[in-house]
Amino acid sequence: MRTVYHGSIKTIERPLVNVGRHNLDFGKGFYVSDILKRARTWTEIKSRYYLDTKGIINYYLLDFDKVLAEFRYKKFEQYNQEWLRFIVDCRQGKQVWKSYDIKDKFYAKRYFAVE
Image 1 (spheres, rainbow, N blue to C red):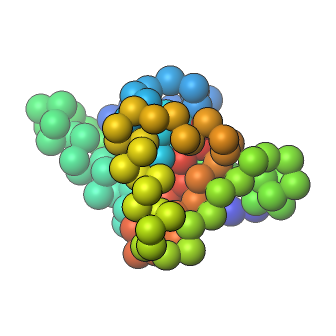
Image 2 (cartoon, rainbow, N blue to C red):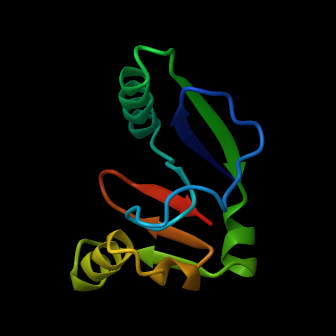
């Protein structure tokens, strides 16, 4: 099991993964990180955006063995052409993210987008 975090202004007990905008970096999904500092940053951003609303860090246990066994999983090891093309396509509204259930971006600002 891996602990992952989601910065928000709300407590989210049961994340909805099929809502949100299609043109985010990794498409529509519920974005989490296994880096607590990253979730704190998003909490601060969101609380300022929503007029100094108090931020909340939600945390969840992710069964990564189950992810690997049961879901369509895409892992980006580094910044490269493949990663850039995926991001650009998603931002342009192309739904390349639909080919995967979970997208994993491993680098300093690691996070997961779960569809």
